[in-house]
Image (cartoon, rainbow, N blue to C red; front, top):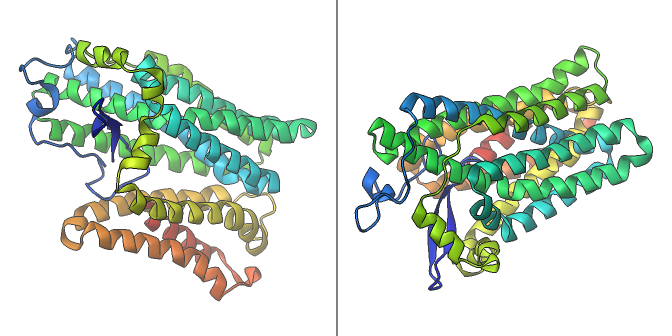
Length: 395
């Protein structure tokens, strides 16, 4: 889904960034779209001069650099979402409060800081900053597990700081993707559509794989006899290692025209682009209920199913099954994104969104129909996580 910015005349215009995840059904697995089918319409201005200075990187170096970045991004974000799914299961009520703080901080950062950060320090450095900040969130689980006396402040402070980084990380990733696609299209003599499809498919596949592996990590390690302090220590090392290695990825700086435009905009203008979009874009009033449905179902899974249902029905007081079951959601979501991408032209996006909302509704409805948690088995819980994956694929 394209990010948006507001022009100086007050008109809302698309930014040169693309939101990659959560998944969308509007295209195939690449998850990206462009406004024109030609390369020149994306990279040339009205005078016929490129709006950025092409680098001297070869097509293969750009290609493998993007794979490298995707692996690092996937590892870092996979560690984050894995810890998030374990928050209530391992920290109890404190985990629910922690997740609330994370989401509130994330929302505030996305509304009032994402565009400012990316325009100020560039896409690569914004990704690096966001990944390092995410490390603090992951590490707070380790601290809360080891130091009982500091459990509450560590969990809440870590979540607040982590949300700030998450708020601009995806905007930065989208901006980097757009620039990498431009560079790859020029170096390879491809149209922009083809370049974004190639790199987008790479990112989506690697991201999915990284999330699944990270979620499985906790289940495998617990069954091998690791303690939770060792598991969260492992996630912390994964997050820190990927953030550190980001320094070795290529940087694609903005061209003179983009830099001039960024310098001419005030801090307040840059910081409130997303918030003004929320207020002025008429489509937002239709998107908010759908996003709310996704959020409610995700919270329901994290705070009730992960923390209570698994513990009771599978007699899993150690939360060993949380990782493998939540990995099913990620896997199904990726597969169904492809399915919905191919079928959206024939059945329409509205039908797919209704299917997603129905899947989310079914997640909670199943427990209303059959509320006895002792009667739930592993096979029926797999169905719940599959339904969550189907719903996730539509958003």
